[in-house]
Image (cartoon, rainbow, N blue to C red):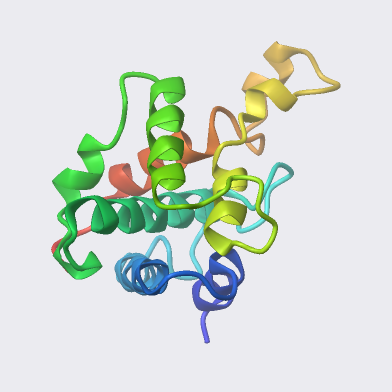
Amino acid sequence: MTTLEIKSAAWQGAGGPAAWDAAWDRTRMILSTRPAWEDGPLDYEMAHGDGELAAAASALAMAFYLLAAQTNVPVTAIQREQVVQMQGANPSETLTAWEEQLLRLGHDPQAQDDPVSSRWRVLRVDYDEQRTGPSSEEWDLDSLASHGVALVEGLRRVLRDGWGEV
């Protein structure tokens, strides 16, 4: 098994709806076709949260899950452009829209036994609000520091690195 497979199984969590499993299966398939993602240079565990790969993989899986529920199509039918269009005008708008969708699907963001909710709590973290210690300038210069909202930064990363038709 690759590092991506091992780590993503932990990020996915146990249980959850069938569409959640399908979303993670497709995410793993897409990311494993990208050399930079497959045991590549990304840090799997950074100081804040799970790291860059976790944020990117989790954001993509969550997008697939929400789009499948919203459009009533299989995860495999979701196109890249649909994921791009899920991004709001700003991080706050994106977080609000996605959380409202999760609530409509019956997910309590605070539920400890729901793998979708557990991953959502990680994705909604704003690293900039959690800063302690060094000044803001020092954080900005730290190449290992995570910045911004995990969901937004994760989506930006996975969409920037691209993924083809799968």
